[in-house]
Image 1 (spheres, rainbow, N blue to C red):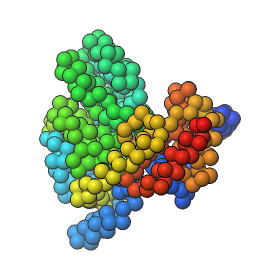
Image 2 (cartoon, rainbow, N blue to C red; image 1 turned 60 degrees about the horizontal axis):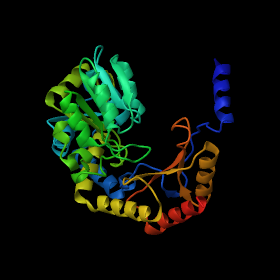
Image 3 (spheres, rainbow, N blue to C red; image 1 turned 90 degrees about the vertical axis):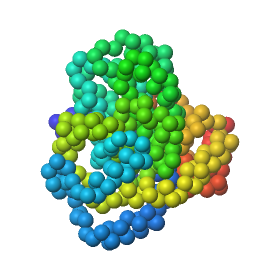
Image 4 (cartoon, rainbow, N blue to C red; image 1 turned 30 degrees about the vertical axis):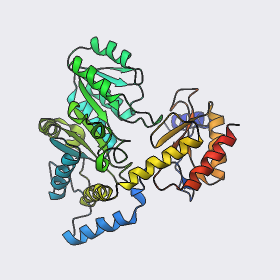
Length: 367
């Protein structure tokens, strides 16, 4: 087995695709998902710790699953506040967006059902489909015609899966049109709001709430480790859905709960954002400024700069890092061959000078 492992790693190394863990460097951040700077915000840190001191020692760990010993008052308070924020009947907190997506899809669909997922959906959604034992098929990215053809042929209960904002291209799903299709064919729509949580909607409530479409969706997943700068996730939906997941969602039932400190962190992060709505406006301003300097198809925090070829995109990323700009090359097979790109992330805390430096260097590399 050791020989097999080394052989596979050597193959990846020879292709220039070997992944390694590296410590964070003191570079200008155009890499992280901390879109609003909440992960680095000292005032949120102080708010969390002040509340912990006020309420007394809350414990260091979850101690067990929430159905055993890991449920406590902070969970109930958080889930009630999240339900109000996301305008849903109920919410259920999970340890991460990956677990929430995988656990949701695998629990609600089953043998005899059909799952249709956008081909660019996150792997956790695809894994949930595979685990469910339902028939699962991809549809072309944001292609309503392909989705309708496949929905019209689906059998059993139908589930359609999309993301509101896509993590590699930074583009948005045509949510209103997908909702109309789902209503036409009585399909259940699941939307992953991972990259719109915090950055869109009142107090960070996401793109669906911003568009007033939240009531037309079967289930929504919100992730807190990106725009909200903390950790965890939640599923928003009907009271029946949440009760069903407590009873049948294996990823929920058999996971040790988040520690109380993490639960408090989520609530305080949303509270801070509600008091500082200007962060969303600053982020949008930074995106607009970048787009005025660099040709990009995205209007979100995620800005793809396409540079075909693994060696080519890796070289550009290395050159930018040498100039103090922290960027990430996305190479095949993570993306399709020929669509390699720099995945740039813009933040509310990036200065105009930093964005200008990035734009100047990108334009120089492309000339």
